[in-house]
Amino acid sequence: MIRIEETDSESPKCPHCEDTLTKIMARRIESNLGVRFVYFCSKCKKVLGVSHRKGFWMG
Image 1 (cartoon, rainbow, N blue to C red):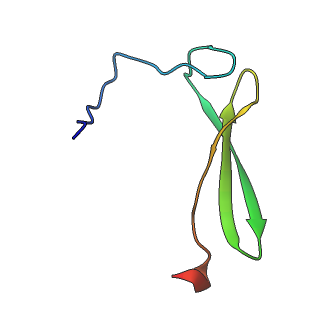
Image 2 (spheres, rainbow, N blue to C red):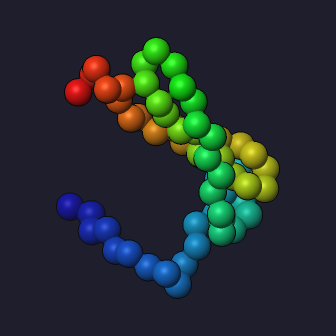
Image 3 (cartoon, one colour):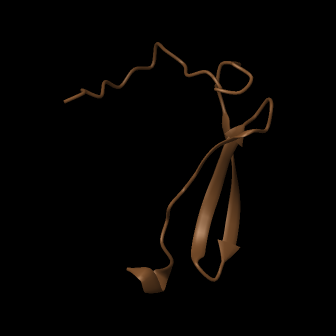
């Protein structure tokens, strides 16, 4: 099992431009499947991830 440890002394780096991530941008996406967010680097604008939030009818 891998432990997760919360820290404020370290900052992650963008895997694309390797800049220190002090801010992550998010853009809302709406569709028939519900609302999701795309998260991206504030410097290079490359995508870091997408939320997997379900729509109201999907439970």
